[in-house]
Amino acid sequence: SRRTVNFPSISIRVMKFLLVSTLLATAGAFSPITPQIRPSTSLSASKSDAFAATALATVLAAGAMAQPAQAITKSEINQLSYLQVKGTGLANRCPEVVGEGSITPKSGQKLVDMCIEPKAWAVEEEVGSRGATERKFVTSKVMTRQTYTLDGIEGDITGGSNVVFTEKEGIDYAATTVQMPGGERVPFLFTVKNLVAKGNGPAFKPGFQMGGAFKTPSYRTGLFLDPKGRGGTTGYDMAVALPGLQSGVDGDDAMFKENNKTFDITDGKIEFEVNKVNTEEQEIGGVFVATQLSDTDMGSKVPKKILTKGIFYARVDTPV
Figure 1 (tube, rainbow, N blue to C red):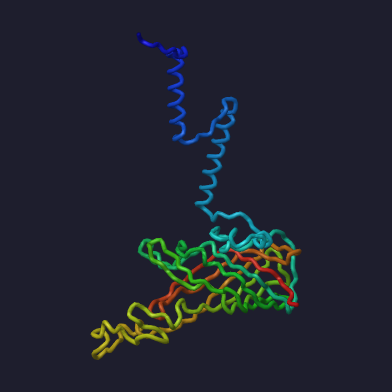
Figure 2: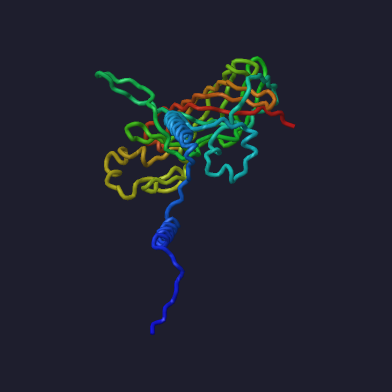
């Protein structure tokens, strides 16, 4: 005789429901988690999404036209640690000043923590139009990483009817390369070495201007060797692989500039205009415009004229 086993009575619908639930749970474990939106807030959520999209588009459009930057003061920068600054680009930015006061410096004081941050570059070249050529500054883009800002510059202040600033030391040069619209790259040494800037008044206040000349050293030093092993103070004095071009009646006339390296020092000019003054912190800030010559490749190329515009920051200090 057969033995019958009694199972609990489970309907077919219940078994199907359990099976489907198990499969859905298993599939849900491998599917990405998506946030749930309550039906009652769906309208407000869609409005906020539209607003966020519009704001993002506005920020991106603004970022395409100008440098993305929020005003950050010197005191705020001093509160940041190395790890907080690393990789953010803040090390290449100058602090901004808040206030429109006035500072009357005295002889013996110093201008310290000076920071000069370029924002735009242009290279002078000949532009042809309707059969005529004229020299114009062509907007160029920087190719150097965020290491082109001058910082930690300091110098002496001479007070009186017209303030005079004499640069002494600091990170006062930065090797920079810009690219012209045609693709040509122009290297130059952005600097304010030996700057003597004379002001148009006795006090730092909005509208105060000062400017003067500075020296631009060679982009490369005498120890640099070109691909042929030639240098200014070391290396070969001729291209060893090209003896045929450097012999005969004319000698090396065709390659004289390439073989005889020089350390060229040229002149530059810079103009500052103060538009912000914080009397309590003794800080000044504003804009600048500078012109200088580009690299000559140690005497073998004709330099181009570079126009640089940007912002600056400095602090008036009294030595102890």
